Image (cartoon, rainbow, N blue to C red; front, side, top):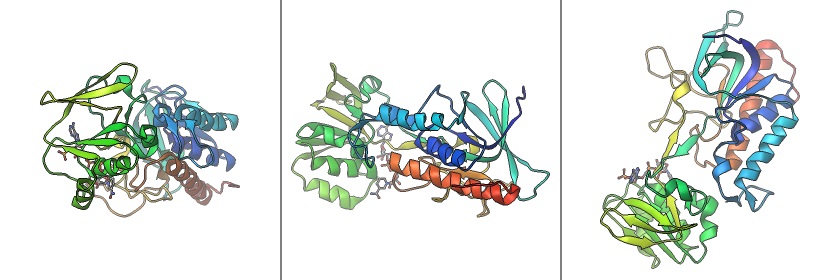
Length: 331
Ligand code: NAP
């Protein structure tokens, strides 16, 4: 390991809305903060969203532009960016203060940075369908968020893929917007709530397509249809993939408690539960480690909740640093 041994008050992992929001709150609290990001000048998943219509005060803004605004805000406050991928995170005992830790982050070039607190905002990514056409049409007809993009399909035909609660809720939501909605699921029973299935069955414009999977999304500039494994094709204008999501919690899984799907168990204030040495988990707090945004347990994963998570986590971290080190803060 090469050691740069930069020591920060806070290292933030991830430069999506949660990370950038945490950074501006930390900066304004007079803290020495760095954001580590694996993607050069990244802004997280939002960069790949089409229009964002549900962020308060900025209707109809392009996802990429909204991400750039967030980033410009952090840059204007001189937040330091470490353009490297974090590959390992360790909490080492802080010799000076018993109830605290030093977070040591190792990067893909073997350099190391350390901090007295760490805010983890690595996000969760939608599980992809992994079929031809998916990447090509993402943001141009393939979406992973019906609440975000459904309004673009007013009076059109959409296919929702999956059989969990997200797929069922998406199909129901889209049935009030679209002329026709196909719900394509690989089995003949649904993982999601039966009550929603019953509601969908009452909708004349919803067709349940069961025991089928999509093998291709085809079209020209935009999708025009999907091919199914039986050989059947469905003409559609949009495809909503609802195959669940994959939280990026791997790097801190030994420090925190994960739920059964891999999300970090953490509250609105970003405080996590700690992992114990024997692999079990207890309800004690991992001191100085906070989690914000899509990677934590929460009900609504949206930009607006990620931004508030970041603000909360930075505020909690600032209070913690003040308690252990007597830092002055003025959030
Ligand atoms: P999920 O429960 O993991 O469901 C994913 C769905 O995608 C499953 O039906 C699965 O099929 C299907 N799928 C996954 N990979 C596939 C593949 N490669 N090919 C074909 N199908 C595939 O994810 P979710 O619906 O996003 O829900 C996540 C959690 O949030 C759940 O606990 C859910 O209850 C909760 N949630 C709750 C609400 C609500 O309460 N209103 C709303 C949204 C989400 P199989 O069923 O065959 O495995």
